Amino acid sequence: MSPLLSAYEAIAGSSALTQLRRLGEKLAGLRVVHVNSTREGGGVAEILEWMVPLMRDVGVDASWEVIHGTPRFFEITKAIHNGLQGKAVDLPKKDWRIYQDVNEENAQRLRPLLEEADIVIIHDPQPAHLLKLCPNRKGKWIWRAHIDISRPFRPVWKVLRTIVDKYDASIFSMTEFAQPLPHPQFLVPPSIDPLSEKNRELGPEEIAGARTEFGIDPERPLLVQVSRFDRFKDPIGVIQASRLVRKVIPVQLVLAGGGATDDPEGKAVLEDVMEAAEGAPDIHVLLLPSGAHTTINALQRMADIVLQKSTREGFGLTVTEGLWKGKPVIGGDVGGIRLQVVNYHTGFLVNTPEGAAHRIRYLLRHHDRAAEMGRIGREFVRENFLLTRHLRDYLTLILAIRSGREERVVFV
Ligand code: UDP
Image (tube, rainbow, N blue to C red; front, side, top):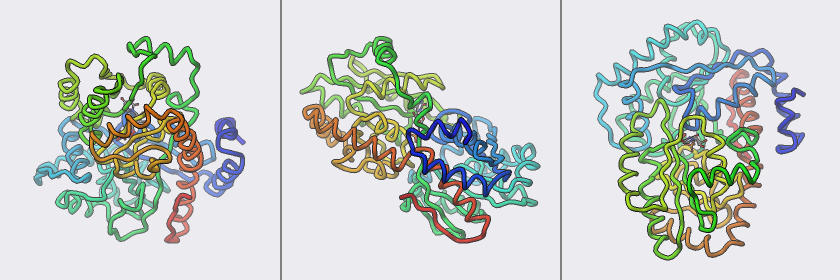
């Protein structure tokens, strides 16, 4: 077994690795191309960062391409993203035209590679139009939706649907997101890499160093939410919750985030967050540079509770990251967070700032319960949300698609 894969044996178990090796043997040399719209920032880039090298490691000829776009293109695709997550957005025909034109420019560069590939996996809506622009494609094309499209704003889905229904298959993170489409749909929840800089074990000095750097008082409890500054992550609701808790417990809050290159809205949201946090020295709003993985790791590890109070969430890798670090997670009762926060077991699901405040107070007063939830959460991630399971699902569904059988891959 290769050194890259075998490093996971102690964490994921040897039978998981044997399965991967066997699947890899069946797919050896297959050309698989992943395409998304950003090399860094956000969960998709986070996953592709490990997925592509590991696919290569088991013998698949995998590669990762990123489409380029103008600022206007990314404003439009952010509106498409928001629309798919249920927000009423205005997307006139001319915007869809820009969307298509930018895809066309990228197709000119990528067409030879994509048309030759055995499997093309297109992540999210930004590059989805590439399929129509590769008329001589040889392989199977899969659309991988990472976002919560359980209740899309219909006019946006109506247009996007005409694009994605030409694919050979699609992948969603959970059943609720699946849509009526004329091809097989697979269910594959995402995962984390336990050995990455973001998730590896840290020594006490590394955690203490970050604590000092950001002026966190070790004597008082700490809440941490890490996310892009995006309205669906509800950073304002998190600030409200911490202010409510602050009335009775001297809690500190870290809201840490940065931008993704395909997310132009971050600046405006950050300004609102700064305003909401004004005059509260215990609320630390951290604008992190890309690649601040060790810092995020340390912040999650120093937290008493990890929060992810989203109002829409495709999956929420930050939830997985928090659970893996043995923290109870209080998350919005939406999307993929529901797959991970098992209410009363690995954390609490909440719908309002008041609800979040209530659960935060409870966990800060019941340390044993919080620690127990953290322990259960870590094992839950080990069973379900590590990259070995994720890679197995991808390899299995590629096998299924190539053999033409309409099977669903369901995680267990
Ligand atoms: N992340 C990061 N820096 C930031 C904000 C987020 O590295 O400033 C990471 C975070 O740790 C997680 C991923 O980006 O690994 C976010 O994935 P998630 O599924 O939570 O949300 P998305 O951004 O994809 O909506």
